[in-house]
Length: 235
Image 1 (spheres, rainbow, N blue to C red):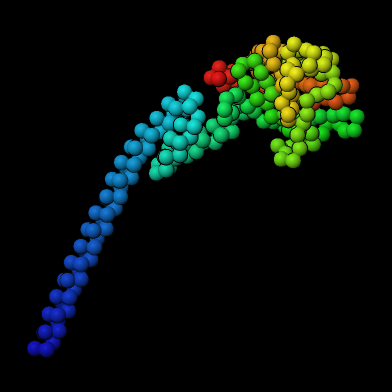
Image 2: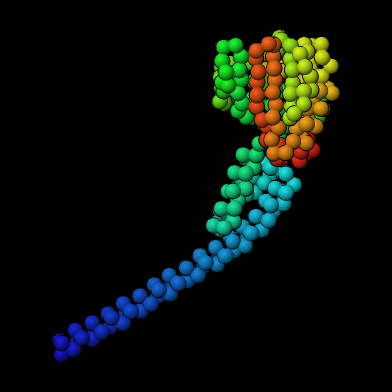
């Protein structure tokens, strides 16, 4: 009789364990199904967010597009594409400057009586369609924090994409170069600025610019023009 009791207890324990395992499996399957449904809903939401972000991108509403693309995290496809778009927006050559204006930063070279083809960092900003600010930082491959360039005190020549726009003129006496120059560079304004902008617009992919100051100083650089006209027209 004792053996039968033990057998019955073991049998009942096995049945109970089997029921518990089955219940756990059912609960696991239920959780997995709920997760799958949530992911599918999230993917649908991601696709809608992605379409909204693309609309902002096409309208060149850059900050809004970055914010919308950043909200897409669940879907691998939409997430990857969104990161690519964010990178493209952040790395575009021309950007809207806080407070107005269109700006770009780039590397160039400069030469004078003491050096030849040394690194030059250029920051170029266009304001109000008729004013260009140029900051030229010598011996620099990025914007320095401890030095500035100054208003030119020599005769000034400007060569833009195959054409001299001015030759050997004093900035304060020439109609297109503003006397009230920026404390960290030079300002080109008026008719000369408009002519320079038109040359940049017409250039394909890049526009070569050369600035001569005095008898020996030359600053050479090329600006990316692929997106310039669209960005400029949005000012």
